[in-house]
Length: 337
Image 1 (cartoon, rainbow, N blue to C red):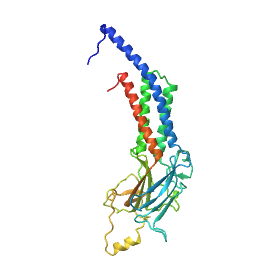
Image 2: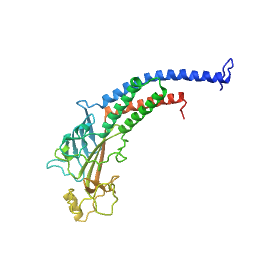
Image 3: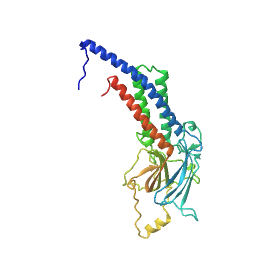
Image 4: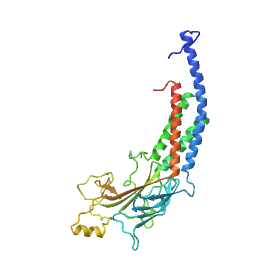
């Protein structure tokens, strides 16, 4: 298909008319992008509202499907987990007398140094359980809102190069926020998401305090809260692959805090084979709280969070909208690949 102009124009005049047409189209596009940015601003405000730390928060069930290994709940208020209670049935966790399961209560605040701290509490002795990924999402959404405001009011909305740069920055912030909610955010210091053995939760957040041989790791994955529980046992001194050698080695004379249940010790002493754990970390050795440990049993439980699911859906739609606007502007400016 070809396009012609009648009456025919000279080559120089035709080029001038094409330039004028592109300039008018660019002016129209920049004007319409202000409406697009207005809708993006409203969507980001909705996301900020869904992520806000408003009481009473969200109460989420954390129970293992088709088994009674984990039965309980947690309550999330913004990025903080303020309350939780679980009944656990795992190897190495002895229930209290008269009970059939181990009771674990999360009180939300502690006095130790092992829990994640919010920026405002970095100088305080009180620790709280904070989901760092949600802090990142809130920060990125706030930065994206600032970019939209600058694009509309502080800068020159008729400058195509300026708006193109703002759209690129906006697209990065929205994309990173989506990735954080999906559980694919990156820790800048280590190049990966913080792991359970690098960042153990503060034992004083629980009543009674979390046992030394139990690991509690709560994170965000696909807009859901993912709880990973691990019972641990001492690792052999040599002969096993190590998951993390970044921590300094402690003295060989230290005493272990991990106790093997009496029933299992008696069974092994009588000639029975030690039960082999069945999970993806059974052959690895980890450096956890200054000791080399292996994972005896691992249980993962997920709970869909309606607020986080709504926020991720909105962010995904905003990511598509910003990408389409960015592509349209690049095309009119002649920068499309």
